[in-house]
Image (cartoon, rainbow, N blue to C red; front, side, top):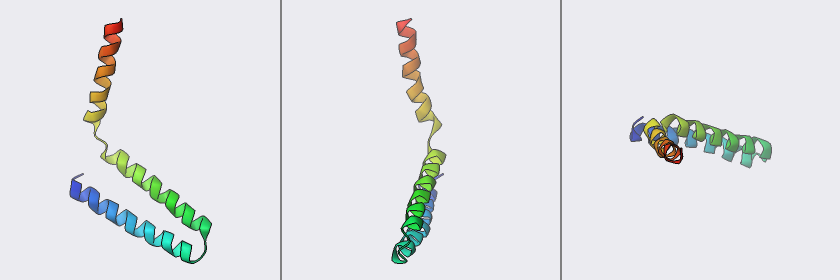
Length: 72
């Protein structure tokens, strides 16, 4: 995903969820508001997982492998 696509998705998600949270708070529906916050957190985590880069993970694994070889 490009930075623009990520920004657009963040804007879309936050707009919808914040609207739902605001409506629930105005209607004094605490449980629904909390559910919406939880849903937003879940969606943000899914987006973060989707845009996580594999090279960064692989780069982190290489030093661990080298240190294991050195201690053997």
